[in-house]
Length: 154
Image 1 (tube, rainbow, N blue to C red):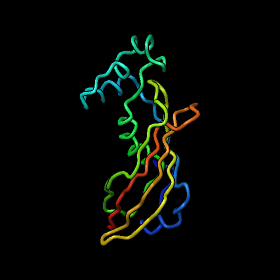
Image 2 (cartoon, rainbow, N blue to C red; image 1 turned 45 degrees about the vertical axis):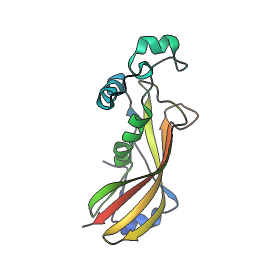
Image 3 (cartoon, one colour; image 1 turned 180 degrees about the vertical axis):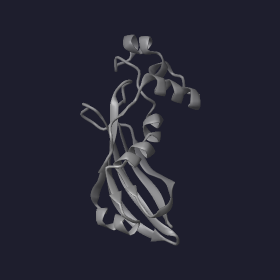
């Protein structure tokens, strides 16, 4: 269950300019990294070969693909908060994405979510979130993104 429940699309208004949620921690396993590598046809050794990464990588281990971290944002966000009274929510896109630090295999990540803006459209509201994905114990976030979600009223 999400940490926070927003009772309606209208209820989002009170969070504009504020943090709306902090997700649960989520472990990024080597198996998940390898499965993602297979799914996207990117099997570079830095992601898939723990022995070589231990010897040759500046990180001392394999790291997750940046796009794996980005793709986990939906799950992380769902453990941070839920908007009730919504027929559906649609991923409308991203304005900006950066990967300032790696996600090492076996590390845990979580998302800190702030609602930057909220505007109406014909059937609902468009929310722009700043999402900062943190890796446990790391000094910098591993992913920062401005994510647009459209919520449609019931």
